[in-house]
Length: 314
Image (cartoon, rainbow, N blue to C red; front, top):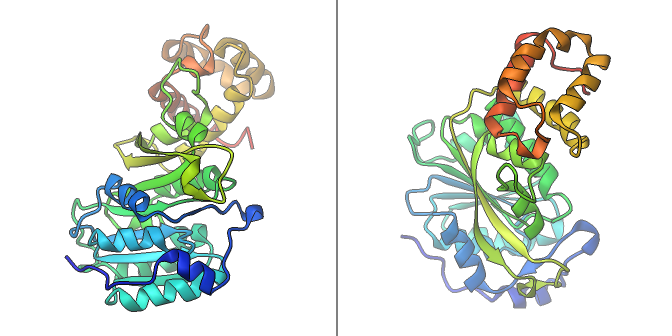
């Protein structure tokens, strides 16, 4: 396994380049490599991992841990140009394994043009087999959930990094509360729309709890590293959008029963009325949305899409 040469501590580089976390961007640094090494281990990175894409590397400590895990190729996507000197120094020390892209992570991971570029970085392009590609990141708390939802859509559509023919594992940092919502099961306290959105495509598991004390500056809340690994689903890009619309409608009225909300929906969308027998066979209409299973919501989305009811909630 290729190890990095001895490098200056990240704390020294931060002082050298006058770097600081900007609260308006939701930035919080981790400066303890023991912590970033644990995050890298929790992602199950190995020297057989073909590609890891790190989002928002900042000064690059997690990047070092990913490289030290032996990953064959690493792409760091950083929007803030202040961090480019430290990342460039790390790239020069990586033996050609690290590439830096300044830009928006959503564009890089979603667009067809970048899909070809990312594919070209694989040791054997198009032949990763069952070895997963990875997205990792200590995401700014204020954009973490929107970013994840966009990537889930791209996963369902199989575009960008998600269209290279290999499974994509996402190991991402969230506020602890968001992590609890992501993995919440039916009929539990934190169950919500994002729970179903994530679990309908992925197995979701919190793999590491990160106390607020390890961040600089210290945030008001603890964090959680959550891993999302793809699982078989009947959903496509189109039906995943229908699912999101259904979830937005029902969870906006989360204290109402499914039957109550469906009756209101029929008033706005009369074509739902003929589907009531099938909907009642799928879901107990006396349940509230948080009590409904992922599979039941998925079957609702497939049924609505089958009957051309797919844009009514936008």
